Length: 425
Image (cartoon, rainbow, N blue to C red; front, top):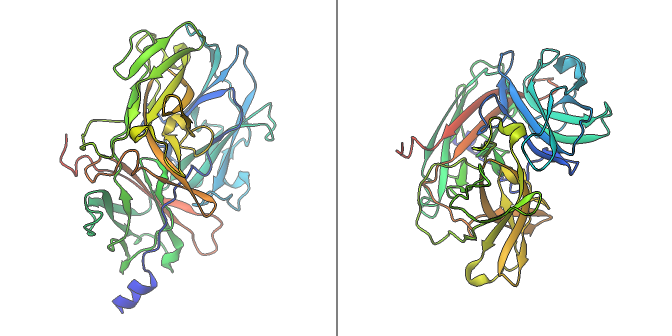
């Protein structure tokens, strides 16, 4: 009987190699869009249902005069399709709200208007758990979308236990990381395991994620995801970094700064392929950015912008055959597209990418992309390499669809960090 259960609920998963399915910026003048838990820029935006927790929203609009921006929420399912609810069923308060807090930039040579808000506000509170879209638009017209950001509201009804292991497969044991996962559904009125959906994001991005997990074992109310091929991720390597907290003091990753232009131009030292380099651990931001500065009091409206030039040198200056190179991290929105695609400079024999970035501390990686069945499959084995020892964050989400339910409720959440497991301080 146990063997039959294993066959019926055998592990089926897919690694989504691509972009965040929902986060988008539609207006070129909008820069540095950030949504994160209060005072924590190194986390995904998530709050508990019916709690006092809030998210910080920040973004800049390049220019010298303010505009009328509004926002609303949209409830989604686990796959980010729109839930079958009216806004009145999941928002307590107004459906449309104005962003009234803004500041004109000061000190900075690049002019911009900085907008910020603490969400949810009292007059617009999500009252159901699940995936949400924050939609910001202009002049109260939803057709004038400016950007979309995703966030999560969790109603912790179940317990989630997870720990890191080395894969059993000797071919993956030194390059990949395996998560042993168990979900206790005892508090639910669950009739079928297919009512549960589990999603795991590595470092909060969708470039490496598992989103069609199925339990390999069922023991009473416990769903276990621990078969040999369950929950396996490439380890990658610690993120590269660039310190742009000051444009006067050039950090050791900056080659030179051209201050004659507005915005000024920062040339980052050329990055090399790291696949053959020995693994080295150091503290990183796991792909996140922190907006901060050493030259002013408030980094949100007193920081400047610069055009930052990234360069990546392939081995022997030879471009990758039939592959594209992308610059990945929060600095490009973890998007596979024009925002992250690098161009090969045949004269310099390097891939280059220019980004307009605000002062702060940035982490990033390079990855190659290849067309597979109409989608882009990303792989870091040619640019960064994969190592079991790498410190990573894993964000684990558990969804439940009640019989006759109209959307996927987010009923479980856990953050797993590999740092203490690997024995480092």
